Length: 106
Image 1 (tube, rainbow, N blue to C red):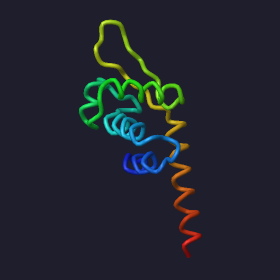
Image 2 (image 1 turned 30 degrees about the vertical axis):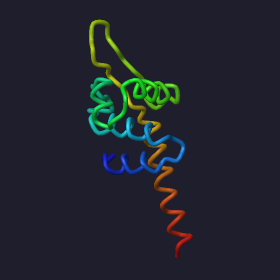
Image 3 (image 1 turned 180 degrees about the vertical axis):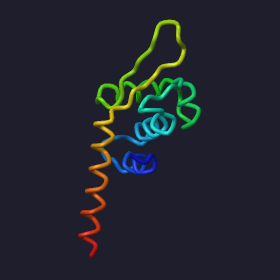
């Protein structure tokens, strides 16, 4: 699936806060095969959010099942696995929302 569609879908997902969307979009943008290798500080810097707030947002995304964190002992950087099921869900909602709004605006 194309990254730009995924980013648009995340941006238009009404159930997440702006910070949750920013963090998730950052993870998607830097991911390879749905895994993002990035530090919390790098995420925080890229979206201009305090590291503590970034931790909270990551925990929320993890609790929602959107990401899973894999940290090996001795490593500073986490690996974040992005749930392809969740991403597909966001895209389906986005496409349906666009389709529905287009039908109404005709």
